[in-house]
Length: 115
Image 1 (spheres, rainbow, N blue to C red):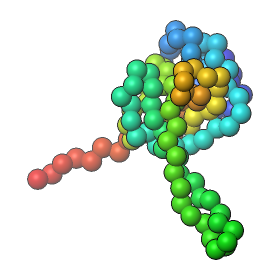
Image 2 (image 1 turned 90 degrees about the vertical axis):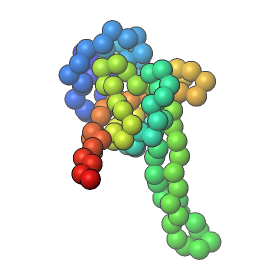
Image 3 (image 1 turned 90 degrees about the horizontal axis):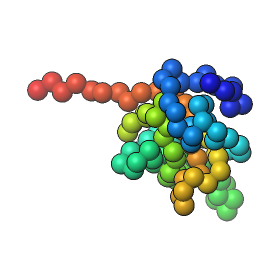
């Protein structure tokens, strides 16, 4: 397993994908974000929602905004809907995927149904 330069620990699982930043040849660069996965329907693709604040100069206040980013989900990380993940920018993998999941920060909280 190689060091990708973000100061984070790699996953425990192994994979042999060439599009994995840890076990393959995909290099990460540029921006890195933390967000929540809202969809994992695509093949090795997740949609990450990122919330941020934008300053409106006219009113001298902040407004809440959100954006959805498509990211590659390597087999060794295998993040699911509801997980909090860190994504990092990489070369374009497909038409809309320019990010890759590099770390699963927090797993989904499953609530037990008691009726």
